[in-house]
Image (cartoon, rainbow, N blue to C red):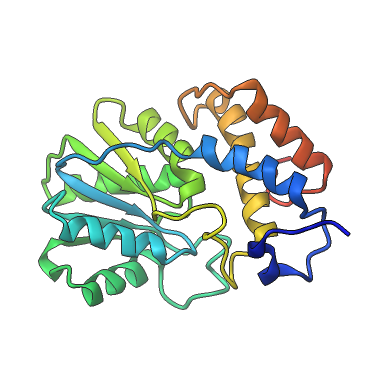
Length: 231
């Protein structure tokens, strides 16, 4: 019998090779996707929408710690949230921030975007409409999307200073009832594929992928973690 780590107990119905080997490979991707930036005082906190409300909580918390005077929530309804929520990601996240103590006048909402590129482009439009000229940003995203968010932001907004952060959770702590271990691994695999191939499509800047990280990706794909791959 294969011994499984405690985090897998929340997902025992999944039979797709979630064992010690898969977890070890997934952690290689998890570590690569995170940038571990040290936060500094910035002009704006930009929280990118998703199905994970802990991102909104992280954004609100660093606002309350005084890292920026304004906070923008960006996100409409994406492929994972359109069947989950009646309101947009940005509107839901803003409500969470208000409940956490962020003042309403510090909050700006962009609620039309459906992907990371649109997050940036529509935020640029919002700032132009509000006549806000900002030079430094703290982008808040899910842990496994830090690197891809950075690469996308730098493609569309190369002259801005950028730091990226996410909820301060380990790989073991991250899964929830809505985000299973299998879903998490599939999403990390899909994001790594995009980091490799999106630069040639003009969506992101190039990011080096170490050999061991790409090897882990290929092994996970071979195990069946291919649900979020682009064709």
